[in-house]
Length: 383
Ligand code: PMP
Ligand code: GLN
Image (cartoon, rainbow, N blue to C red):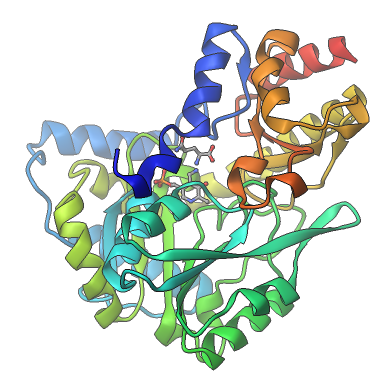
């Protein structure tokens, strides 16, 4: 392995999923649903395969999907993207992020992350030969909020891009308008690109509003918005994502993307176009059901003795293990599948400051009610 990729040898999701399988634990570690997306969407994919739609799609993605993405964002956020030049279909949000960093950040430049960060961000920065600097979320009572001072401190003359993720994996934090406005002001003042990872944009609870930073003054011209069918339509294995932004920036992303994968997921693309156009009621039902499941799991974790941080969005809830007499999240998660028959993910691995985060573990509530019931039964038995 080349030096710059050595820190990224194995993802924590793979390790915890393997432990879950070995100990027949309920896997609340890796964030993937164990139920299918809307039936009509699955049918469109089957029809595309049966109808011979099995060759390379166009480089930027099938036109119907690009039009559906642009129409969806115009309808929900009022942001306008030209489907021909400002929308690019990618192999999941993962490729969108990596291609954006490779295509738009020079080696040696700085990219700012907010920790805890999603695990692919630092790896993408390393692939590009760029450097990461981190701002952080901080606990304010039970909730996590952006530490504005840390964000100011992370900006240098070499900063080119800031990567944001809201709704946030792993904490379930949804950044509010004041936070996004502060970030936007910093981006405008220092002329930064903002890569906004919005894969959980639909999955916000209790009336919380997801705001796309691209809608704020001065931001449309410098923001790349990333999203994905994975979480919205429960198809994490399809790997259909997208990125939207100004044509010149999308050109940079495409320059990298065409040599990473060229194109991807031909027959899935018309299915996702269908879903974005016709299945948003299904997504609303998913959101309500996830909101319920989150409360049920959070209550069971609290009964078991964890201190649970409320989650306002995403697939995830974080819990403090210190009331259980533990203080090492990695060791805790390595032992949990055998001890309680439930798997989770340590949070400190998503930071550059593990000492400040190793009291936290992440659980996903994106599983079927029966799956969660079994996890809850095991947790309550332990309590
Ligand atoms: N960003 C975040 C914040 C995620 O949680 C995930 C996966 N769960 C991704 C990106 C990757 O999305 P995809 O599966 O579409 O590549
Ligand atoms: N994004 C998913 C999570 O956070 C996992 C994706 C992966 O396994 N790389 O759990």
